[in-house]
Length: 448
Image (tube, rainbow, N blue to C red; front, side, top):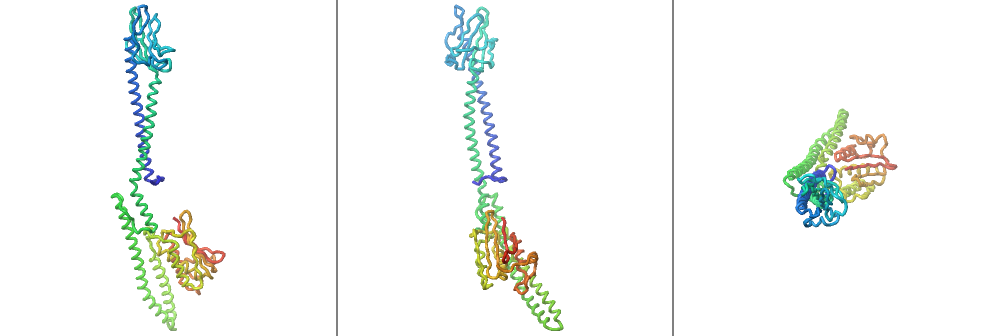
């Protein structure tokens, strides 16, 4: 299961489940502890009331006036020293009678000041005690005080023991509920994970559409994305076919116009008009080549799902350049980019490299180097370096303009770098030209 990231659905679901579990477990803890304490206190109070009544029934006055107990109380804890369970009987003019457990201290006889059974929290021999008592009139009219008590710590011990066990159990329950919640989140969002992986395969060029079956809530989205991908691919294919058809349909009439203009230019009486036509035909040819190159580029490329494999895309281009520029050596430096998938259209990227390599081949003295560099942050850079004369610094700013040719003696139309600039912008790449110590370097950079 993926770790929850800030702003993710997993984190929101996890926070909601955690809050619900904490509130639910907390409510159970508080209510259970309160209910248990209430029941234990009620049980203790009922037990003490029974014992104080039993104490009154078992108490008698001996012939010599002493207070005696006809038999021990039914609870043996009243006979264990300092057990926390105590009783005491007092009367004016007579020695008090105490339980065997009360080896020190005494109980306050004033708690028992009424024939009705009363209770309070008082200090006992071993700490705060729940105390019950009542009075009864003796044979000579004196008040006999019956007092019985149980240490509060006994009640607290039971409540604390229950609270400790309940806390451990609820903590385990809360952990189990959170683990179950995580499992439910993972199971519920698994289709979204599959959709994300399918999109990743699409971006890496490992698939041509979103694969797999999805729940009814996601299936329409996947179907719409696949329809959009197919529509985009069809649109690109049609654009390229139409660009090729347009090239064929325009070049023949333009060639005829150029041929006629050349004939007019050869005649003295129409040389000026013929030259104007030749110039305008050349401008038309430049614009046609430029616009066709732009039309062939995939304007919707980021959503097309097509990728370029490095360095495979460059190998046929380098072989073609060595045939096109005999005597020039074209070298490839892959670095750590072998097998890397660049998320751009391979046809357009190949055309971009072809333009830059062809331009470098025209000006190089002996060698052109194409190098790929892959950074840890996902940036991929292609550099084309030549050992030619470079470009004068003042001219660097205008070499991308349409029709600019720095040396008319060098074959070309002045369109290559302008087309390369537009292709790079269409693909979301950055194209820069810089002079080196010897030659020129073109840098094409992809930043994720």
